[in-house]
Image (cartoon, rainbow, N blue to C red; front, side, top):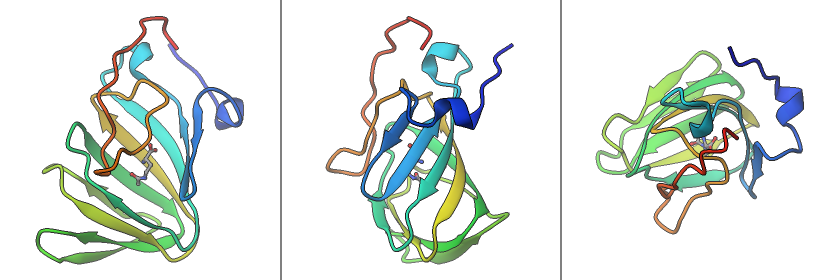
Length: 133
Ligand code: 9YT
C-alpha cells in the first residue's frame, strides 16, 4: 500500500509549479498504478489552453470557480466545486479560472513526474526511470 500526504509533496520533487498552476503529483508512473493523481491549484485569473494528445485526463473540481471551453465546438461549461470533466477525446480546450481553483486530476497513462505543457498544450510521453519515484 502507498500512503502519501499533500503536505509531504509540497515543495518537493512531486511538486511542479508554473505561472498558472501548481501541481502536486501523488501516485506517479513509478508507483505502477497505471494512472497518476494530482492535487492541482489553478491560479485566479489564469487562462490555460491545453490539448493532451498523449494522455486522457479527468478533472474533479473541489474548490473555486471557472469555466472550460471546448475549442472544436465552442461549447462552454461552468466549473465549480463538485464538477468533473473528462477529456475522453483528447479535446483541445481552454480552462479559465475566475477564482483560485483546486482540482483533483487523473492522467492515463501516468505522468512520470516533471512534465509541463509543450507549445501545443500537451505533456510529452516521458520514459519512467524505473526507480519507483
Ligand atoms: C486542469 C489542468 O489540466 N491543469 C493543468 C495541470 C495538470 N492538471 C497537472 O499536471 O496537474
